[in-house]
Amino acid sequence: MSESTAARGTVLISRVFEAPREQVFNAWLDPDEVAGWYGPAQMEAPRERISIDARVGGRWELTMVRRDGKGEMTISYEIVELVEPELLVMRSDPMPEIGMHKGTVVRVELHDQGEKTRMTLSDGPYPGDAGHAEAGWNAALEKLGALVGGASR
Image 1: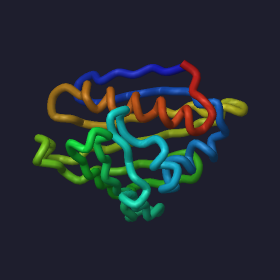
Image 2: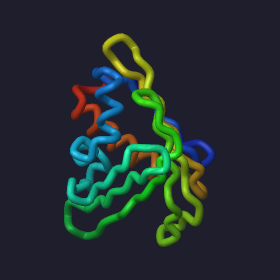
Image 3: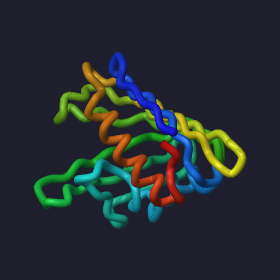
């Protein structure tokens, strides 16, 4: 099952994965796993361009590369909360080159549902419409679902 909304500049997505919570949590913090799912369909995150220091105050950084070779985008976060295996909160660096003069906060909450995991992700605030961010997250989470064994829609 998946629900999402990009109301008022904030992305909110809820999804159930057919995998244990520890596996889904690890997919957020293991660079090898992140390389397998992060980014929208037209992008990939090469393993050698991912660095994750999984601790409060640590950095979660990667560069996405367009599959057609026509560009790349670096994303950097500071980890501000980390409760294994249930919570990851990260604050992004500003990206004025794309009109984001303030960072956003990504909050990933993971809840056991038997052998499945309900993930709730929020990201924002974005200046104006968050539709592009929502589309990017939904595409990435489709790939995450495929990596961990599927997501219920």
